[in-house]
Image (cartoon, rainbow, N blue to C red; front, side, top):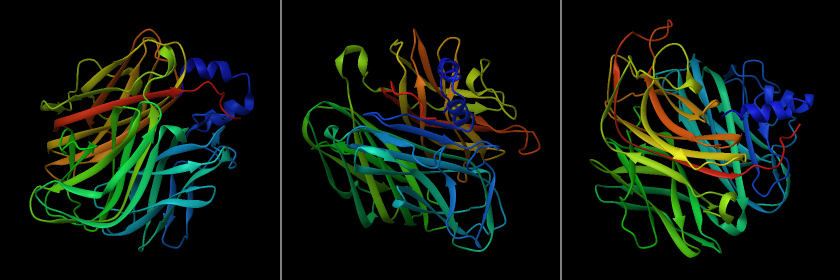
Length: 445
C-alpha cells in the first residue's frame, strides 16, 4: 500500500508529485499496465479519511484521483482489474441497516455492492469489479456510497486500486441472477472463456449477495475439464441475511490458447441461495523476456496455527503498531530484481476459532532488507466460531532487490481502550499470491 522509499526520494524534487503521494495517491502516467492506488489519510485531499455518511445523503463520493481528473492512464486498450475497501469505524444505524457501494469508471457504474452494517465494528469491507475493454486514454476510477436505511456510518481508510493489462492477455466478466448451492459442487454461472496468445496468470474474483445460508459456503475454481476443489476457500453465512460478499483468487500459468475457467460453490449443510452474482477474470502475462515480468509467486499452508496476543518474538517492521502483537502465518520469497513493479496481491485465510474477542487484523508485509512496507492491512471481526477471509493487496514501484520476503500475519487487537486483553485466533488453511507487473512510468502529479 506504500511506495518504496527510494521512489519517494526520487520523486521528491517535484512538489506536485510529492503532494499527491502525501495525500495517498500513487498513479502511473500512461502505461500498457496502468496502475493506481488511492488511499485516504486523515488530512487527505480531495477526500479525507473519517467521513460520516447518513441516510439523508444521496450518493456520496468516498474516493477519487488526486486531481479528481484521472487515475487510470492506458497507452493501449486494457482489461482493468478493480478492487476497493474501507473501514466502518462507528455507526448510529441498526445492525440490519444496509448501504450500497458503487465503483465507477468515467462516471459510469461498473459494480454495485450491498452490505449490512452488522453489530461488530470496526470492520473492513472489500469490493471488486472489472472493465474488460477499457480504451487507451486517461480515465477516472471513483468509489461512492449511500445508506439505504436510517442512521449513519463513519467511513475511514477508503482505498481503491486498479491494475490493467493489454486486452490480448485475455479476460472475461459475467453476471448471474441466482444459483442454489447444495452439498455437491455446483457451477456458479457459465464457464468463462479466455483466449490468449501468451501464457498468463489469471486474477479471479466474484461478488454476490448471500440470500440464504445456514452453514459455511465453499468456493473453488477449475480450468477446462478439471474437477473443482483443487484449492478452495470458505466463508461463514452472514448473521443477518441477505448480505453481500466478495472473494478473490488467482490461477497461475495458463498456457497460451483457448481455455475456460469455472467458479464452483457448495454448502456444508442444507441449500444456500446466491443472488446478483458478478464474476471477473483478468489475464496478466505469466512471464515475458527473462528479467522483465516474473511469473506469479504463491504459497499455501493448511496446518493449524494458534495466534495469541503474545504474538511472535519477531514482529514485522513494516506493520509495527500498538494494540496487539502479530503472528506469522505464511511466507514466500520473490526473485531478486532491481526494477520497480506494481504489485497485485490476493489471499485467503480461515479462522477456525477465536477466544475472548472477535476483533483482529490481517496484514501482508514486504521485507526487502533495509526497506519495509505493508501491502494491505484489514480489520476483521470473526462473528462466528468459523469464518473465512478473502483479501487483496497492492503496492506501487517496489523493487524486489537482492532478497524480498513477503509474509502474511494476523493479530488479536487488544488494549488501547478498544478491545479486551488476551485471547487468540486459531487459523487453518491460508494462501497468498503476488503478481508483479511493469511500473516504469512515473507517478502522475
